Length: 178
Image (cartoon, rainbow, N blue to C red):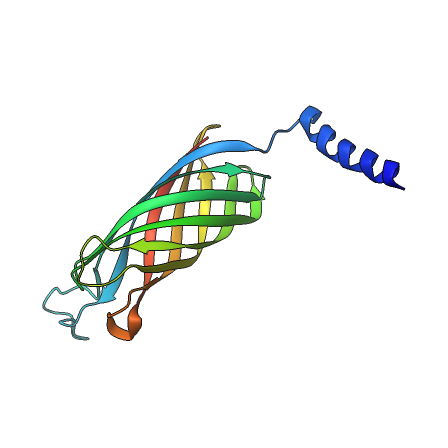
């Protein structure tokens, strides 16, 4: 029985080394996003030219990771968040797990979840945790470049802030280089 289990384990490790398609591909990723807020000066009789939604932050990210399977990607990220509506700056560092729900000719619909640490460059608020969950569309530009559009929910746990957290939805674009 032990020999059979050892054979199955070794074959399971040996077989992917000689398979035709390699899925364990490293990549570098970068993205930029913004959160949107409702304009307080907007009126239904929109004769004053005020837009309904206004940008409320700038969210920039860089990261690296591995595509473990054609549907599964894991990555580590660092970034900078500036929420000018709340006068808050933060530096999140987090890991992301992405799963491609559907794929068609290099295009993919995916969901992703993130978890990590939120560092505060000022002493006004303490450090906290970072959580994220999103949905997006990725499209291959070439064999080595992929672009994406994401809609993501962020929760930044900040002790001392309203309700001890900052919840927001962001809309962003990104690029991955394989």
